[in-house]
Amino acid sequence: MSVAVAPPTTTAVAGNTRPRGNRGVLPGFRLSLGYTLTYLSLIVLIPLAGLVFKSADLGWTGFWEAVASPRALAAYRLTFGAAFAAAAVNLVFGLVTAWVLARYDFPGKGFIDALVDLPFALPTAVAGISLTALYAENGWLGRFIEPLGLKVAFAPTGVAIAMIFVGLPFVVRTVQPVLLEIDIQMEEAAATLGATRLQTAFRVILPAITAPALTGLALAFARAVGEYGSIVFISGNMPMKTEIVPLLIVTKLEQFDYPGATALALVMLAASFVMLMIINGLQAWIRRHGGEGEARK
Amino acid sequence: MRGAKVVGAQTIALRDSPWLRRTLIAVTLGFLALFVVIPIAAVFVEALSKGIGSYAEAVFEPETRAAIKLTLITAAISVPLNLVFGVAAAWLICKYKFPGKSALLTLIDLPFSVSPVISGLIFVLLLGARGVFGPWLEDHDIKIIFAVPGIVLATTFVTFPFVAREVIPVMQDGGNDEEEQALTLGASGWQILFHVTLPKVRWGLLYGIVLCNARAMGEFGAVSVVSGHIRGHTNTIPLQVEILYNEYNIAAAFSVASILTLLALGTLGAKKLVEHRRLAA
Image (tube, rainbow over all chains, first blue to last red; front, side, top):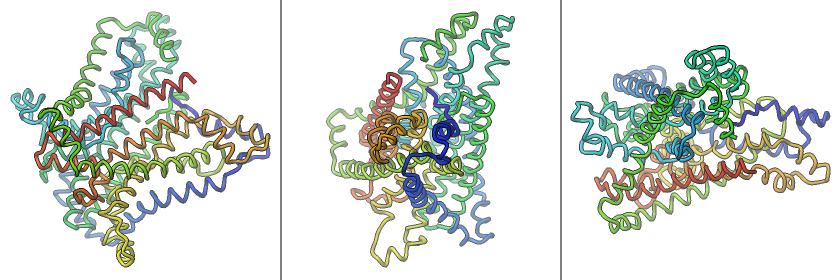
C-alpha cells in the first residue's frame, strides 16, 4: 500500500531502455516544466516572497517590537507548548493505533482504519464548534470533567485538545506501513533465538519505527502550530492566556496593523521551514536506512 | 495483501498475549471514540436538537444558500486549476530526469507547511488595499481581497499540492514502458497522456480530486482572512458556520456544519472505494 518509489528508480528505467535519453524520451519536457514552474511561481512562490518583501518595510526595531512583545511571547509559549503536548499524546496513541491496525484482526477493522483519516477530511471549523460544545460546562464531556476541577473549553487544555484532533492521523499513517513491511522473519528469528516478546519489541521493532514515528510526531507538531479554525472556537481567545499565534496575526490584521501581522507571520513561516527541514531530513534517513518504509502523509 | 501479512504475524510464537491484545484494541477504540466518533455524533445531535423543521430552515435559508453557492463556485475553479497542475507536475517529475527534482517536490509541498492564516495573509499583503499591487489594482478598479477572487486564490494556494502528491507516486509506480511503446507506434505526446498515462493513474487522480475538493470546500483560516465576512456575498459554508455560531444560533450553526460533515464522510467513503479498486486493479 505504501508507495516506496524513490525518484531514481523510474528515471533509471527510462535511462536504461533508451541510452540516448539523458532526460527521457517522451515529449513534453519543456511544456510541463514551463507550466509547472509558472503556476508554482504565481500561486505559491511570488505570494510567499511578497511576505518577506513586505516585512522589510518594518525595520529592525519595529520587527523586534512586534515579535518580542509580551503578548506575542505568551502566544508562542501557548502555541508551541500545546502543540508539543498534543503531538506527544498523538505519538503514544498513534503508536498503539498503528500497532493494532497493522498486526491484529478484529471485526470492524476497516471502519476503524477509515476513522483515523477523518480529521484530515473534516473542515476545521466544524471540529472547532463540535469540540467546544462537547467540552463546555454543560456539554456531554464537560459536565463530567469540570466538576473534577479541570477546565477544558476556554482554557489552554482546550487548545491542546483541538490540536490532538487535527494531528491525530499523522503518527498512525507514518508508522502503520512500516509495521506492515517489517520483515516478519526478523521477528521470528529473534523469537527462535530465545528473545522474549519484549526483547523483540525493543531490539527489532523499535529501531525500525523510530524514524517514522518521529516523522509523524514532527508532522503532527507542525500541523498543530499552524492550526487556526478548530482552536479559535474552543480557546476563548483571551490575550496572554489562550491566544495562539495565528489568532494574534488575525487580530493584528483586523486592527490594520499590517507590519505587526507580517512580522509574526515571518516568525511562524521560519518555524515551518525549520520543521520542514527536519521532516525532510528524517525521511531521507528513512530512505537510507529503512529502505521500504517511506513515510507517507 | 495486508490480510496475508497479518496472518503471518500471528502464526509463530509472535502472538501477543490475549490480555495485551484486548487492552491495546480497547485503548485504540477508546481514543478514536473520544476524538473522532463523539465529535461527529455531536454535530448531528446538535443539528437536529430543534427538530427536523428548523434543521431544514437553517440549511435552506438564503444566506446559507448563498454560502453553498460560493463554496461550489470556489471549488469549481480551484480544483480544476490544481488538477491540471497536478498532472503537469507529475508528468514532469515521473517522465524526465533533471537536476533540482527533489527541490521542486519540496516546493510543491510547501503550502502544506504554511499556516492557513498565513496563506490568507500573503494575498492580503500582495493584493489588498495597502498591498504591493494594491494601488495599481485600485486604479484599474479590480477588487480581489474581500471579494470572490481572493477567496478563490487563497483556496487554490491551500489546496495546491493535493492532486500532485496523490498522482506522483501512482505515476512513478506505473513506469514508462507502455508510454515508450506508444511512442514507437507513432503516438503524439497528448495521445500518450490521454490514452495511456491518465488511464493508468485514474484512481490516484480521482482520489487526489476528492481530497482537493474536500479541502477546498472546507477551508476556513485562509478564506476567513481574505473574505471580509460580507454576508451573502463573501461567505463560504465554513464562514457561515462561524457567523451563526458567534450569533449564538447554535442549532443553525451545527445544521450548516452537518453539510460539511457529510462531505467529509463522503470523502472517506470515496477513499476506501479508491483503495479497494486500486488493490483490485
